[in-house]
Length: 414
Image (cartoon, rainbow, N blue to C red; front, side, top):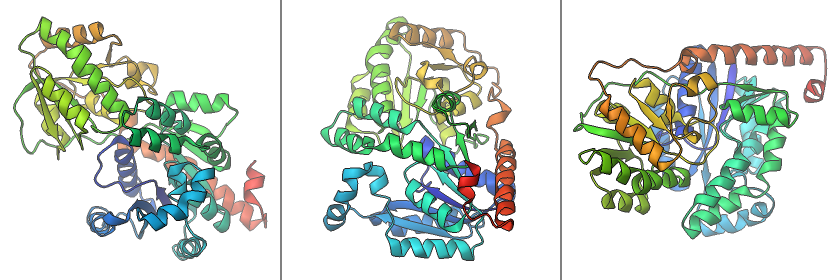
């Protein structure tokens, strides 16, 4: 199996769940013998040199060839994109590929003997469709969210005018595009049980649940001072910002009323001003930015919390929290997309008073005994073998169709 993998953005650094999911899948494919013949990624043009170095260093031996496509932020490039934005989502329009570059990518895929396209995230879908059609090979799509729902939610909870505008532009015509990608894919590997159920209710029978991969947690490198409660996640996406403000402003004061000495560490990447200010205004709260090793935070905490209030897909951090073996207090939204039996591994609370009470109870009942991971095995890297088997069947059927001289393979599938 030789794949061309198309990603919305670079997996380095893995500063949010989407990037983490992509990186771990690339690693799992490689360990199971799948050849990543091409990795096609978009990034801002100012990052090209640094990203090339990061990719070379971190994907050495895992990817045969990678292509970086720049999202130019120059004004002339933005003006050139404007007509496309009128008819496409902003995130899709910024990833459009001109005909000359497309021809080069098609030829590179032929030379690399690529036999399937793996679209990891929605927004590079136009390129994925073009490569699949030109090369007459199957397209597989990894769905991270019901994107049209997720983007609308992000737009609603965004605070700044710029963020609201970006998410509004991202929502334009995205639902129709998302349906097109799913309809044209041989298989859709959905991250979420609930999202898969939604698409099946819409008449799509090619969607299967494929849980995200959670690698064993790394060893802590820089031990931090002990804190009672910890949150770890990106500190810039609107849904995380909203959830953390609810935790800091509505939940945490109730915890302090019941347990005056309780401490909270908020850790993650690129905190926006709202988070910095909210942490500064709260009692016994420490903000730690851009932690290099997640285990530094996990090992120093007694209880993990996931206060997210809106979203789609699956919270990657929720699975890592389970892997620590420590009590995890979460909203129902924070475990959305997981099977019912896996949701039962969390302590769920949706009101501020219930969330605070659950934190206090978990702290009062905490034991110093070594905690074992509660993460189910279906989230381990070895589970990727199921995906590989499903893709192998489809690739074989495409090859058989080609050998029989069937010109339009995609129409035969439908």
